[in-house]
Length: 453
Image 1 (cartoon, rainbow, N blue to C red):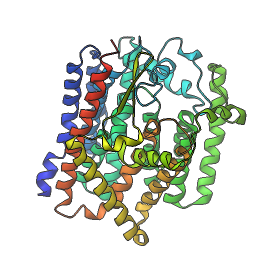
Image 2: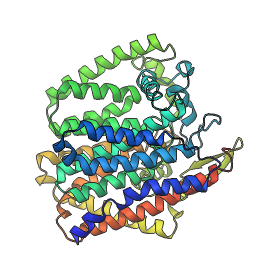
Image 3: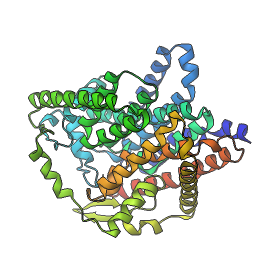
């Protein structure tokens, strides 16, 4: 049975770009596909060309996942992002139009960012500018391509990390597909924002840590992470501390990262005067306007977004404000699942419950490489504590923790990989998740098409 599943493990990922294309064709008034899609194939072929034969063989499955998800995300991004319409706050409070301006617009250098995103301009704008050489000067398409490539790279890294830890190619493909098909990644690898880039940095840091790479490369990754969102460097600190358990090395690593970040922040302000210094405390006081009262209701909503909605999406709550739709998950969203959605929800809760059980069952026998499981649990706890009192819409930040949740589940369930029933169950869940979450995306596109004309 396991051999049969291994043959079909790629199916949900392979069908994803076709499903995304169907959603676009069903909503042609907002579907703006360009020949840029061919660039993705060129990038993929070039990637294969520059790899040696051994690397090609070792990474074939991951590269296929990269191709499927990059293509699918690009197609979805061609539905949800517009230059002529202010799409801020439509998709779960994402500032998608503002980030499009910052990353891609010719005059976007003067659009300020808050101190929690201290040098985003200097990171994103040069890359988008370079990609315009592949998109015929079209800055929107260059931005969408960058977004999709980052989303696809996240899936490749997740596959690589799980494959290295478990040694099982089938489960690595399926867990990476679960991340790629999660509600969080379908949104934030398709709607212009900064969160998918944070996820990419967090996963890359984990891969570097697993492979004991240079402390300087780790520090550079942390600098890039801090530049996108200041708080995410704390997750890398937890990974470094719990996975390597070398306080001296961790102290040196993050000393280098902070010094490098301050220097780059100063340089960014020189080039882009709208930049704020993250190391000046008063610049961070403006974040208080996003503070939320910590109540049982808020804790419940945060728990649902931390563990459930980010993976298996219910039907979103839709409202109309300023003649534009607004999509959100509210406390009552747990009741808003379709028939196949209830199956996805039930299976996910069961898998997560098993992961928690096996984690605590084997907590004393955790192998060196599996110190990542406690680190992922610590990252989840960090995000919970941070966001029970910060952020109007918890789902907005879900890309910052969805990777940790799925990686925690993959590691904790590692001993089930050899069981004959596990791979079929994981495949069925991935397929059901695909159906549920693509329907969720279709509902968003259908409603958005009534307004984004």
